[in-house]
Image (cartoon, rainbow, N blue to C red; front, side, top):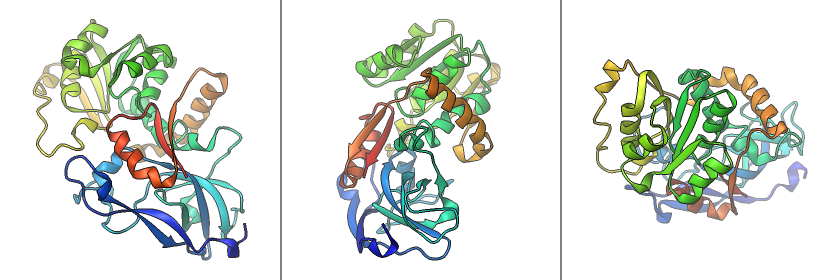
Length: 339
């Protein structure tokens, strides 16, 4: 496709209203918008896959955070991968596959400096939004760098059937964990953790108090907790952690849609006597690990020792529903939207 063949318009998602608690479809609007020709140093990309991620829920609130909130009545953004359809940037040709940050839309025109070429021969394009992308690096950096994982550690992962958690458990196993346990929200996901991802044990957190369920699968306690959930899960992990245990605080999806303060953890004082380390993490701080991550995880993918799942929703028009479904646990592995 040459530059003059670009369509006049493309569809993009705008935030129509700030969600109060759980998002609803009326909070989003699908809008026809002009497709802008690239200027000097720019490319136009026809997106093939869009990413929907839990962190996006926080950006829908008008609060100061580590990333600016979405503006009302303006296009949202997020990870996307697609093909260059017009280029005025050196080093980028029509047909190149690229990863960039202007998702939630069919066409994106952006500074080529904000795009990274990816190899569709190494892995399917959608993998660059998941196992070889931001979620994969989050799992890798969070476990190995933030939580200081050591061979022989016992590891507990919450939200373990999601894009990040499913990789954390597998990386821990591949790196020599003594025991890997996880939580998920359905019996089917629990079976997937054990049968497909090689977790030693897992539980459905809806089956009872998390502390009791964790004690059943990790009776000897844990050394590392990778937290995607917060709340009651974090409280249970604090109780189960050994002295000098470590927590990588990656997410708190249990609280993202709450309108009141969380009830847990109520046992944070245990962190003093146990000398626990609870450390928050943002994947953007760990870019220096990207080369090692791609080499090591790419090798595991090639030899079949690491598995990943995707939940693919067809059609850009279904992106908002995919995001709402993600928050309700409708995904196993990475949730992506095929444009």
